[in-house]
Image (tube, rainbow, N blue to C red; front, side, top):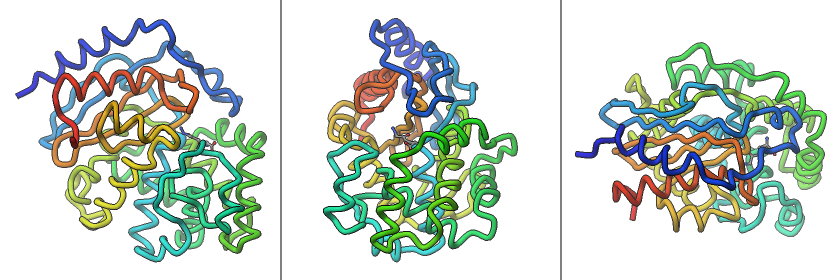
Length: 304
Ligand code: DON
């Protein structure tokens, strides 16, 4: 048996004073205000025990981490039809890369690069009655926590500066891979990314990916096969052009966001969430990756 609290404490101390903590994202201006010294780690075991250190109860912008929850919701609504519109291959390119969409006729490489996530957002806009309210309710249900909300300033900040996402959505639309108006889909997408959650709330929300598709309240959210697919996508595409590096260093399915969060999990064992807003050049949390590498090395708990 591991003493998880002692392990998290050690990792936190080892990592906290790393000199190069990366750079806080500023291309979404509202994110640039976040203090780079925030650092939290939270772990939830499948048995329901929880452990935390540092700023694990402080809300932050989940950004691209939301793409996994959006995909799960879309899969529960339309199942395998998703794959007619989005592929399942790693892109080897940055999350906001445009050229591949043109070359590959409007079919995004995977649901976690922005182009793929915008197609998933389109599917949710088409299939939810009140997309923004229903998606928020979904996350509140997964976590059993009504306090979770959108940060309107962050959503608005991205709406004012998200030129590449507008380009992406327009390109998808030109290939008939967007059914709703660009404005409407991006309004949903920017809000989805602007949800604020703490490390401990994210560990709860991702529980069903480690529990064969059933959430904390034991309600089936997605099938076993869908869990297999989503975890495979997290491993191969969750960190964009750094997915190989994350598998190499950490060895777990996971997803990052430019708010500096990373959620990773080992099926039927645990979910671990790290938050440190300083990012490396690929847009992934610098200390987050270091902490997770140390965790799987120390505990010998990875899928490999
Ligand atoms: O669309 C964007 O650029 C942001 N809302 C999300 C990007 C993101 O989190 C990339 N992940 N590391």
